[in-house]
Length: 468
Image (cartoon, rainbow, N blue to C red):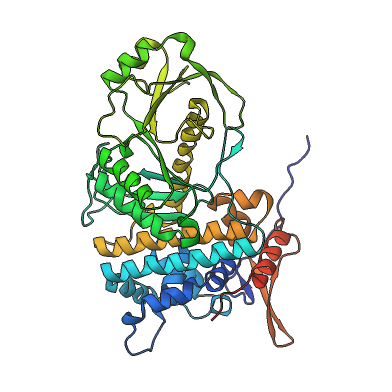
């Protein structure tokens, strides 16, 4: 029998020097400076520093966003940056960061959103100048023109009493935020922190989140660019769709694709569709989807009150194991999903293509899952205002990771989720050395992703900077 190999014996002590952890997080901090996020935050939070002494509030906000992007879960996790001052510079203490969150009121919070929009404009310009550009969303093997906004709500469980936390419709307790992500890059455009008992289909909240998301998009892209708004059935409120149509009439080229409840009139219409009108459904790569069919219900249902030109489309398919089925689905032996859209027939608006385009909305669940691991999965305070600021900074952290993928990374890492980026790049250890009046961050020569991280730092150094 061959003996199992033993690991080398080691002695552990806490007296090391010249070695830093989470060295890759410096990439995020420098990126925030390069796109102007730190400077914009400083301008937005200047009223909170009336005497001009102490830590810059904008720098504190940026450090909090970097910490969240790096996987931190509490304000105290700023210690990871603060205790490595040679790499990250002076970082505020936990009480100082806490006071910043507590002193930020609704007006200042709106300024933080505007600052993030300024940084986004710079990041998108840098992407255009470096040749990367805005990635396109794919559906059925085709590139979708313009931008795709995905709105969805999620539940955040609170394990202690927090202001405005409330029972949820699933029997839990906490918050029920509504968010909007940019499907092209994964950026967290906007979000609204709401009590746990907030309605999933509240039109006013959808309108607010959409308007805030559109305000985040640079003018050059907001006007003259196709923008598709996707939601589940919670976004099918007539007032919300009428708002989208009103924005279109004011010059924004918005279209919608929203889920729709399978009501009794819808069930009767589905049963009335002849078999010859069902067409094979498509997968995301454009191939036929096994066991799934699509049909159009437009003209078979009363859509009074919805914007003119609204179409209604249904997909039926064999349910996969564990699928949640209604009594109607169980009777029919197939799972049915219905959605509304105002994309016209002309210009490639076939029911098959529109259905697979709408099905891509499911990726927002991955965005939310990653977002919960980037700040808004837990909240630090009993005070709702503090948690609202934390929520906004978590969106900034999501943006930093998205901009890092867009501007600095290639290949597999350019589409990697935060967990992989942290394991491979952000949490890497390195040694600090000095020579020639320069401070060097030396990544281990055996680290598997050393070249990718070094290349990212080099690309960051060559990014075009905004004037001034």
